[in-house]
Image 1: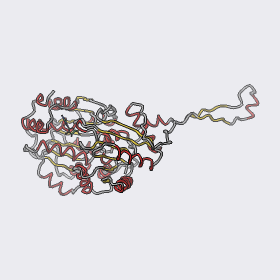
Image 2: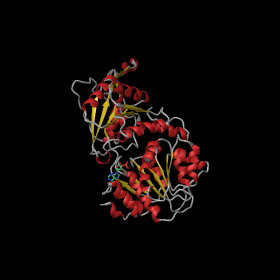
Image 3: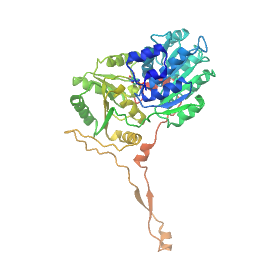
Image 4: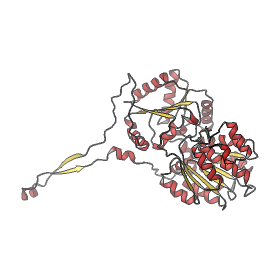
Length: 449
Ligand code: AMP
């Protein structure tokens, strides 16, 4: 199948050609025609599979072919869980709107509110936004959604995991035109809240499941190494950075203090490394992301802040210095490499503190993972054994025992301890107190920090 088979509007087709894309990816092959026919969609697709264009192309096609439902209201709203992903989507969108009359704006948490009010007053056709900030503008009447034609939810699973359901419902209710179409993308369709939400938002949706999150990404080779402790992890890191043929490298750590510490350590070893953490303000983060994207640094050390939305073909290696707390993050982290048909390496270091997360990833990938070794760096740690059933001898009431001499004097109580593997299969995601929309948006940028 070719893009020309979709019957795209001329300018849209010329942008696709200009980008050098001939064949639509799998998700594009299925989602573009279904969305162009006007169906609501619930679609899953692996990271880096081209899903952004799977919704941008039908959105632009609809706008060029149909008259606007309202003169002032936005025609398309695209919501994403994080600012980084929103920027990524916006960049791709701008490539397509550049030679059209359509205006697109980006509305993110953490940026100047009043500037955004001015931008919204100019009646943009497209809004790409994170849900918390957009809901704030909606509440304050800075724009209306009654004429909205297309609501697109990118990574809906993550938005719901981050607690944005209230804002999504608010936006959904405000976008009340009967001709509204909704496209929902999620890393997985096996997500109870996503399915519940889909019932609320979508009308007779087409379900498209290309490849579930756990399926093998053929362009990314995964390797796992055991490590006893921090210094062994650092020795492994140094080994990989000095021996692997690499272009750019992203290293993921569990905490923000580790990002600073590791990048300082690497700089001492003459590695051009930079740290990105949630502690930095938005413009500092943008600056670091931009300079890394321009190739000014070899290594980016970050928390899960950058696990989604960075689309750089020069990232040859992702190194999980610590395993991610949330299993799905593993897929998103390693999806920063092997983009757009390039090959990538994903290396994960597993110490005693990572064991539970590692078992979760193993269960999620539905495969038994074996560990690779580096000569000269030998880990004593071989993984934690699930605790065995423990046999406890109970004390027996001697008076009763005397009455029934034939009965055994002891009784065995088998106390089964929770098997680590069972815990591994569970998803543990709880937040104690409800957070404000802004706090949620900020925390989505600072996970694991
Ligand atoms: P996404 O999954 O949307 O983040 O896209 C991943 C990367 O694939 C981006 O760099 C896109 O520009 C690129 N891409 C999207 N569609 C195609 C296509 N049909 N052929 C080749 N590359 C594509």
